[in-house]
Amino acid sequence: MKTSIDLGHELPLKKAVERTKYQEQALENGRKIIKPKEDLIKGEIEIFTDHDLEVGYEKASVLYKIAFPFMCFMMILGVLQTLFYLALGKKKAVKERRLPKNPGLFWSGLSSSCKRIREHVATHRALDVVYFFEKIIPTLKGLDKWVSVFWLKRVMINTKAVRNRLKLVHKALLQQVIDYSQETGKKEINLLSVACGSAPAVFEVAKKFQQNGIRLSVTLLDLDEEALEYCANMADEIGIQVTLVNASTRSLSDYFRREQFDIVEMVGFLDYRNHDQSMVLLTNIRNLLKKCGRLLTANIVWNSEVPFMNFVVSWPMNYKKPVTLAAIGKAAGFRETKVIVEPIGIHAVAICKK
Ligand SMILES: C[S@@+](CC[C@H](N)C(=O)[O-])C[C@H]1O[C@@H](n2cnc3c(N)ncnc32)[C@H](O)[C@@H]1O
Picture 1: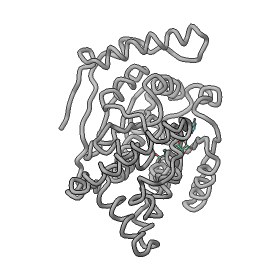
Picture 2 (picture 1 turned 45 degrees about the horizontal axis):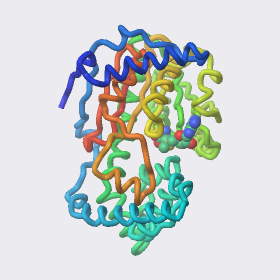
Picture 3 (picture 1 turned 180 degrees about the horizontal axis):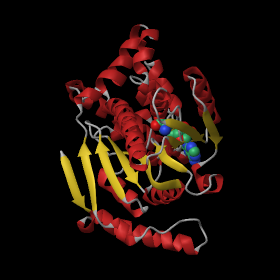
Picture 4 (picture 1 turned 135 degrees about the horizontal axis):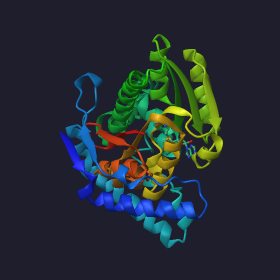
C-alpha cells in the first residue's frame, strides 16, 4: 500500500501550524528553537508499508488471536490491581509502574526473559532481550524456555514488530548512507545516533562500510552510561572507532555545534515523547544536520496489544499515527519526509531530509 497524503487537507497540518506558533512563542521566550518556514510544511508526504520479502519480516500469527482472550483476562487483572493500588493511595507506585508481578504471573512470573523485559522497560536491556531472543533461546530450559518462546517469539505482536523495526531501520540507514553519499559526492560521513541504547542497526551499517569506499564516523549519545559501555565493547569487538557522548537529548544544541552531522539516527525515543516534545527535538536535530542531511527516526503506532503492554508488561509509550510522525517532521522544517511502516503496522520509520 502506498499512500500520498497532501498535508494541506489533513488535520495534522492544522496541528503542525499550531505547533509552529508554539515554536515562535518558545523562540520569543529565548529558547533555542528555529521556527520552520510555513512553505516547508506544504507539499506531499509519502507513507507506505514495506513488504520486501528479502528483509525477512515477521508476521502476526493465528496464535495471537487464539491467545487474545487470555491476554485480555491478564490485562483485566492488571487494571484491577492498578485500581486496588490507587484505592490504597499508592499513586506514585502506579505512575512508575512499580507494582508486584501478580497479573504477569503467566508472563514475567514464569519466564526469565519476560521478567528481564519488565524489570528494564524503556532501556536497551529490555530491547536487547527482544532483538536477540533467538540467541537467548538455547540458554533457557524447561518451562522457562516454553513460556518465553510462547510469548516473545510466537504470540506477542509487539515483540515481532520491534524486531521488524530493527530490520527496517538497518535497511533504510544503509540506503540513506549510500544515497546521501551519491547525492553530495561525500566519501566521509558523520553519523550521530541519539539515545543509541545498544545501537544494533548503527553497528551493522558501520560494519558494512568498513570494507566499502565510504568512511563512516560514528558518534553515539545516550544518557545511560551502561549503554555506552556496552557500545564501547561492541565497537572494540567489531574493530571500529566510535565517539561516545554521555548526555541528554535536552542538551543536544549546547553539546554540538550547528550543522555538524550528515545523518542522525534516533530510534526508540519519540515513543516516550509527546507531540510538542517531539517537535522541539526534531527541530533541534535539524539544526545539527548539514545541508541535505537526513534524520532517520521512528515511532510506535497504537495497536490491539497496547492494554497488555500497559497493564501486564508495564511498558507505557506515546503512540503516534504514521501521518502524525510525518507532520512532525514537516513542521520541524524538513524539506521531505517519507514514512515507512513495517508489515505488522506497529512501527513507523520516518526518513526526513533537510
Ligand atoms: C528504548 S531505548 C532505544 C535504544 C536504541 N536506540 C534502539 O533503537 O534499540 C531508549 C534509549 O534512550 C535513552 N535515553 C532515555 N532518556 C534519554 C535522554 N534524555 N537523553 C539521551 N538518551 C536518553 C535510554 O538510556 C535508552 O538507551
